[in-house]
Length: 209
Image (cartoon, rainbow, N blue to C red):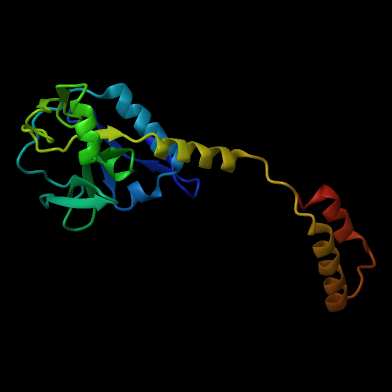
């Protein structure tokens, strides 16, 4: 899958819908633009299914090394992934990717108590297994805590995209800066006899936009 980076360059990531996971080469996850992150969130929503049981070991697709299970923290949300010990990249499940990008957060004890008043059973967001709210606050199958989709993060990313796409107002100081540059150029090289107004013409739109 080809996505955009912060620098406007292309980032090619590997996707496995069967195992419900992404492979990111080193730094690719950090390079994703807000628009690309939202695209992956949409992709996860359109392709979510019950993931197959993960094998005990993974081999790095870039080298013979075995991936190492790693636990990390995004604010107060724990997430996991398998990383290459030689820093070639990481293999991360869809649900943990949403946690990493702060789309999913763990419910607080107060929120779980409120949930228990109205609902007896929920399905685990990670593996799909049932969770009996009367006796548990985490999945008994995979150990994932009860979590919810946090819509504040997508809304913030959309605001960033709208701000980036908005037309930028012209710099009101540009004519003065061009005039100063013209005087400095004439001071260094003297006026150009063949075309003394070359910088003025450029500033009017021929070269400088």
